[in-house]
Image (cartoon, rainbow, N blue to C red; front, top):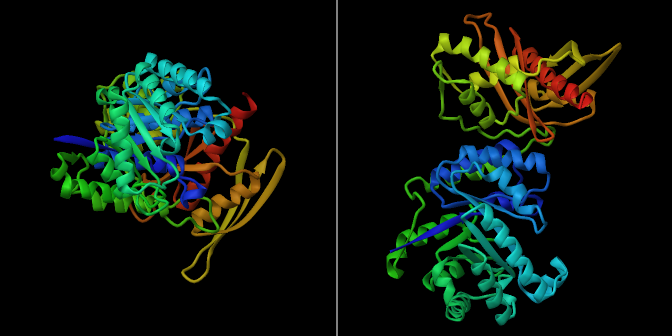
Length: 471
């Protein structure tokens, strides 16, 4: 019985063209949900912004416990090294070399002749193999390629170290029986394929992607690229259910946890298509909490590693400060989780002179009118004002701050914690902002939770400004 691996491309497909986009934090949550579902491979998008995308890869690598993490390599001399530096800590890393194989795409996308493309395949697959045992060669637009060239490309990739070879029906013009014949034909022409995993990627242009994928599996394919949400690809839910119901008929079975598939996919659907406010750039999706804790017996390396998993990049000096604060808390609490560590980092690391100071704020909110915020913030001798409407008092306040500073930072996380008890309890908030691929956290404390939130945002903002001015 063959195990058919599902390679999820939801994250790679996210963007304007697919109708949904994901924030930094949402991508990490998506990866954790897919890992819980036990998909075999989670594919990430290529590195574009080195600092931000490298941080994302490292964060996902730390959060995913079982699935293979696959990242495409750019066809540049140091492309494999850039990806590997971010991916090497993953439990199961994979490097992908994706090239167009059809004459049209080779000419217009890569500007290479067939001979040059074969050299490029050899060069980049070999470079990836020198760094990582798991290398995937993706033959783009394979179904419209010249048969003899496709065979040469596949042989070259296998000889250079590819352990998975994926064939793409990019145009989506094949019917199931045609795609089945295509897979059987390439197996017959390139016997070396029996030594590697054969994958398929099918476009849904004719609404036949799921059927074509099943036909390919029946003809020997062992890996299928699919998405957890509706895009122009094989649907994860459908292919998993088909394999579960009919896999025995062709000696195959899926690995996805069918008992959880409906619940987890519903969570992913909400994550990907959560309505973003027309007024606010801040996302409102549900966060999954971490399942790890630290104790008083953990040393500084364990604490710093946990901080890195949360996305922080601490200097040696800040790392020592965070560890000292952690020890004081851990002796009292015995166990310190992700929320507590967030608060420790916010209060201990990168304490800087404030560039922006809160002078005053007025918040108006009711159940019949949209919340509004009027903030006065000083910068040096100047007092700046911001007035905004938001989805709630805190959202309106954050928008007013952005109006004052004229910049938008991605809100990676927002936490509210109670510090004291009773009707006049003190509230503490932690705000995490993402700037230039680095997380900055701020903390605010007040009996007014809106005031605490404003102070936390300004605390994180001041850290960003200080670093930028002193870079």
